Length: 482
Image (cartoon, rainbow, N blue to C red):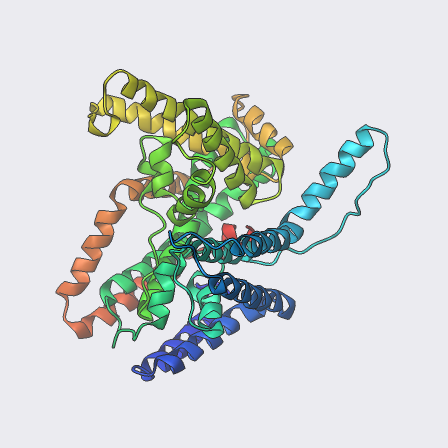
């Protein structure tokens, strides 16, 4: 169910009305949220819903088994917790791996077998990927890891844990929410009303503008460029190179704005996931601004357990590279995602080498200031590392990505043509990556300067403008495929 749809609007209005009519009755409120979350996901099919709920029930049981093992005096997990933890990780990764990676793995194994003149050892299965499986499985794993380490919030009962996993604003594509961030909110008394109505409404309107207008328009104008790049001129593909990155930014950050806004309208604070990422001047800063909850999980659950940056320089660089390879594979089972992750890993290694060189020469990178021209060059380099790596992220396969690159570098002049409105839209989204936070705060301040009865009029006016600007169809969220 899309946020920008009439069925969701009806579902949310009914949910919010029931939820706030039950203020002071937290248990009843949680049952309303659980029912709404199931209704939100159920149109995707009963078997997907069964997988979601079944996964949540099993992981709750595994978490309870972990919590039941007495901890050592120093706070570490007891010896009996280790086999339970490993079994939980194998179960979750096996569950995700079957649905998401079996087809890729079996195809590649059979391809290698064919090269060696052997019979295909693995059957090829047509497996439908359940929407949201990567996100809810990852969130389940973070819950179990945090419990094992001893600093996660433990759900008081099965209902609260299932609600933590299936809470509809963040169910499909995040933000990925740690147990200590959401479970205390679910189990607390809750506010007596919407805690920050101006910010909540701004987030919802921002999400609508980004997804319904900007992302949908850019997708309709640019998707064919990546599907059939040989039909476009080099200049058109150059525009598409920047435009596709801006489209996915609007798509994903817009969904996050929606999620955070709707959650806030129900009294819940979800973590921020984007902070003007395409204004970053280095690749490490980009990952501190882009899909922030995912980046934090990659750091805490992959990079640091491998040793982080505490070992030798070569070991640190290997850890960085492997972490980004995992990030690439998490996004999808295809070589294009592996190449995307490898390019980001190499970029992070080069930046870390530069930082290490500065420290070796007696300069603290955190205290260094740079002239405007240097920052501009650094921004230009970072942006192009990101957009070039995305050639392999957006195209159907590596061959199409290479065709795109060859066509881009062929300097051809004849193609289908590109509207000036596409360029203007891309420029607007670029500007949002530098001034978006300030624009959002001004809109919040403007709302709060109005009399309370006038604010709904403003919201309806903005929604009417979005409806007028909406293209013929709203583009499905890109990350639903992950």
